[in-house]
Image (cartoon, rainbow, N blue to C red; front, side):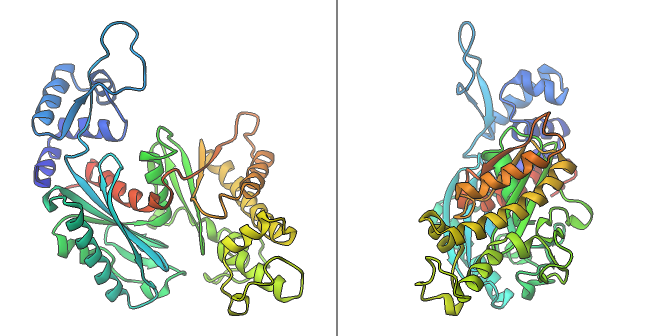
Length: 407
């Protein structure tokens, strides 16, 4: 099945509505599709039969709900083998490319060890080469790949695919990150912020599935967040929403890469935690990090600090909990503004350290204005290291199925 067939079908209003119901609303029965779309039952049945004939939709008897009486109803779903997507995650030192099914399953992937601070054009060429290799290795026909999603850190022009601003990789400012993919593979390519991609992947296929209002938080060298409102990504003006790392917590605090003082990034990111640990260790305070030969070269990692804290190092534990307190303060403000059902953190050594998230959760519980009505559930990404790539691929599906998209 060629992607041109799908694009042609999406030009038919009712067909597009049915496909959106299957994907966005996770509708799995004709009755549910009728309820979501408002289309007449006979028309829905006709469309479903047409899509089954074209192998875009399939019938299934899989269901999580037990049947009350008699034979379980025959359900419908998007055919996982009908089409595929590509997710590309561009990160500081470790990037990746994945082939993802429209059901969110990873078909093939490859890690890319590349210093992204190198020449952006050379790096993009490498990413395109790896993408070509991964597609070939997967055995997926290029005609079944409906689009490529490219994630990046910072403010992204989602329509043009241009990096408007990034403090982590300033060499990439004004770089176009999608044209090389469009030209090489002759298919749609879209750009997305990495935190947006992570939370979207979790909302569509991970721990946030079924939730309508979610805040996703990525803590790495910097801190970013993605916002889901009523089941859709919220971008704000200039697609600049979600820059949690640049929320000012201490106006007289450390200078951030962005030029402001006291940004959350300078207090609770992995780079901030690592800097604190190096500074304290060099000051002569006794810690389990003293024997780390990389300290003089400032190569100590957050994983090292977490490991020391787990082994009973009170200094390292204090550094981590101090970052958690600052993060908790920032999230109190966000929760009071957005009132999400769930806050999802990326899966990392830091977020896997139980006292860290416990402290964040305690702060939110104590400070959330709505605490008597309920506070958001705190979760760690269930998609793990695949979350951003799956989310970038999901962003492609979202854009293609959106009512305002035209091929």
